Image 1 (cartoon, helix red, strand yellow):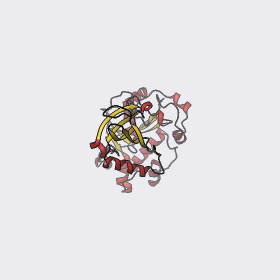
Image 2 (cartoon, rainbow, N blue to C red):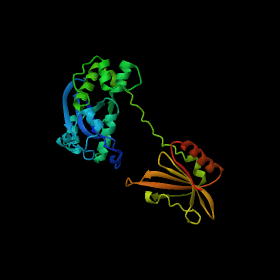
Image 3 (spheres, one colour):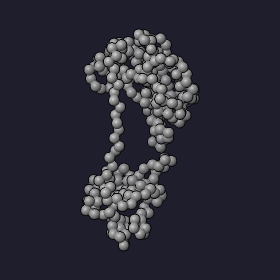
Image 4 (cartoon, rainbow, N blue to C red):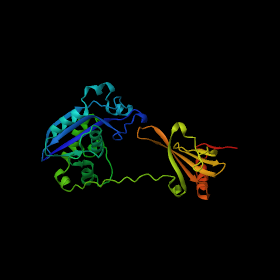
Length: 305
């Protein structure tokens, strides 16, 4: 059994509108992989570094550039991720586990594999060295930076940080300073956190919902009565900070309604609105008045007279 200590650097989108969301929300595209191979006794056996030419985030994010020193023109020197991944996998060998400093590298590796259609079902087990470090050294449940942990152990910081191979070497040095056999034996993998769906601020209005549909942003004000399909007359409106819109609107024949336009993205990554029409009663009117008070001073309220 060998252990592959690896670290990666990844580029980020240069703006929110450039974030890749299909087939996965890609927060980081790998541009460097550095790794150190340890044998079963945790002795260094080999090391390697790859430069990856990104497919999507081909312009260096300013923050990443400042952190790593990698420039946009450097990105063309690498190979595409699928080719690099095959070389990295061959170098790792057959029987091994991963060791990383923190959980982020494995998460980004999985995302990039999914992005390029690479099977993730056989990814080897990964030990988060931070957990072993905390259990043996700090006795604290917190995240330490790689540089801070090196300093705490009295290890030299003689290599530039935020270079994939240098950071992998630092991580391997921390392994050498810990009782890794004990750490591996006692290791307890953290339980994945189950992310709860965000609770909508409109959740309490569901029982009063009488009509719902999706509309394009170009037609977001063309609201119609759910009973006769005539245009509704807007009496009051709120422009929410999250860009949703809330209206009190009326039909001459069927009375008043609460209308909420919720801004979201469709499968083509374009902005659309979900139009929900609610019966206007004591609860829904109270909701509108409550939102109006919250919006006071930070979003616009308009009353037609």
